[in-house]
Image (cartoon, rainbow, N blue to C red):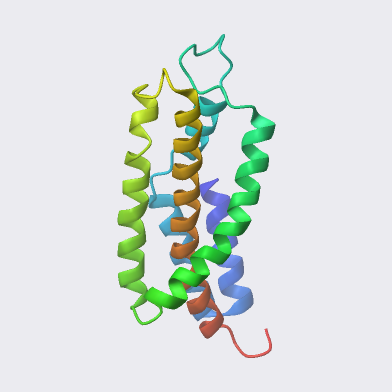
Length: 158
């Protein structure tokens, strides 16, 4: 995977120039260094009772459908938040904020893993939707400055 990523960055660098290539390399390094437990949480949230008796046992179709709809809504929420509150900030400051928020949202998953909602499955489902929605909003807020930098670095007409 590392070789494929490096090859992709070199190809972008060669095809689109140094400025866009540097942004692509930055994006790849940034994504590689980010702690992300979303795949593990998906497996935990959708695990059947046979594999984990105290889990939330969400139906994978329900989880992916609801989260897909929420993710699309969150794009508009994130752009609105960025435009209203963060557009005057430097990209570096936005990245610092979003990485801090990302860490905070990941830590917010602990009550589920520690089974604090074992006796209240409805509250657990609400908490999961809130935590996952917050994660998508933070990820989108993190991506807005990157795409603004990318659009500024790209040559006109490309």
